[in-house]
Image 1 (cartoon, rainbow, N blue to C red):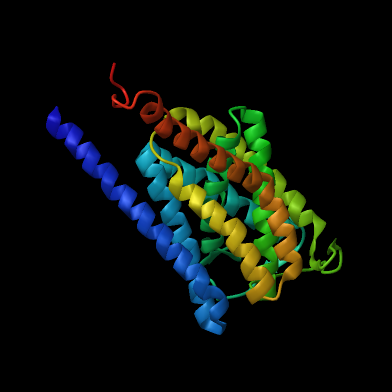
Image 2: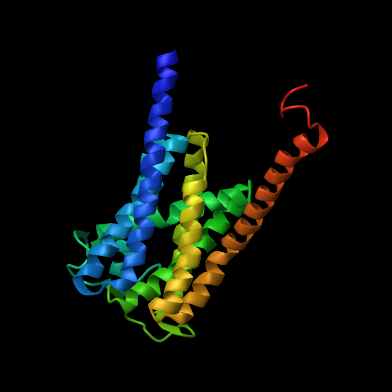
Length: 284
């Protein structure tokens, strides 16, 4: 029994270390993106996606188990790939668009496989943070869908500017982002809502145990780091503003919650030594 408990603890420590290491490498790779160009930037784009997926799945393994992590990947990347294949073939639900050829690796029906993986890497921290914001399933689904749109307000302008994909309708988007039609964001909201609904059911298969630090850090970095990069390094001030506001729907309440939690933790640590200086916390 003791050996089994120790083995489980070792398993958890290993995956915690993997998740944290992938997160650090992810941030480093994203910092390198605006400093690169051409084929090197394409390679960094792929590396960023792979590291975001690895970070997400490693954290899911630690907190919910390998079975849950595999299901999360299948649901989100599966639905993501399906929506992209249908989208490029029919123009529904995002609008009419096409991917560049031979820039992001292997593709299925013209959709790079790395794009399907990007759905998992990007949605996971949004899903976790939405879960910290509310216990109501319907609200969490809505927050996740809105958060996904906020993330795409960074992603699409960045990738379109880099030539990774292009839209047939390049003149009916938001002010400053006319090259990306409104239908894209409506499609993102709808697809992410379907994903979140499926994840709400899937979450019942495994209880959450452990820290949410890694996905929270990834979310904050995506939100604030992308806003800075777009405004200062990538020459995309419009998407910097839109993305900051879009992800801020989740980000601002998260920051408030973190500040309050830290304040409450400080009060709990201070109260015992102040009220009972001769006692240790937890003693009578």
